[in-house]
Length: 194
Image (cartoon, rainbow, N blue to C red):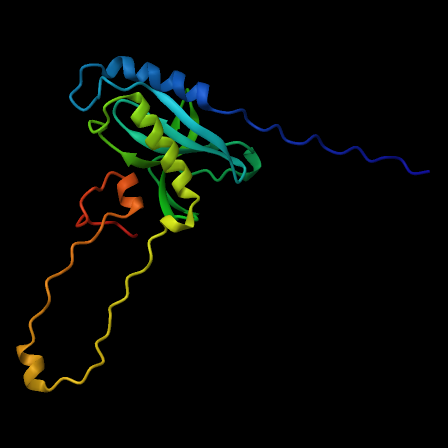
């Protein structure tokens, strides 16, 4: 007969942070009313927070920004990031940069900016829809940006032709889904790939 060895209790998973986020940012919103960068048609709302790789991942909508937010769910898997420090996280849609943050009411978390300011949103329903679509888009590999390779012209060219060849006009770059979700609506916007 063998005695059963007691197993340590499984670590408790932290609950959905949506209520905590809504409460904390609602307090901030009260102090920000009337400021020029605040969209009065919007409210504070934590959108689509779901478990992801032992963390909570969702989108925080406020009248002044929309951010992806990552918070701990299983403390054993959480990687602390100092306030203001950056880290890159891979998703099927590409690599996104998150910034460390800490708040007494929210706790340790990491954010990735999607929109700021929020003046282009007519109302809460539109902001909520974009937030849900942004979170879904992270997990769709079709949204990943394909690397751009220069096209080679292997046709024979004489030195005289090469000297007189005119450069074709640069094509207008289409807006990628990633740029759209980050508020870069101009195809010529610079995208930081660090």
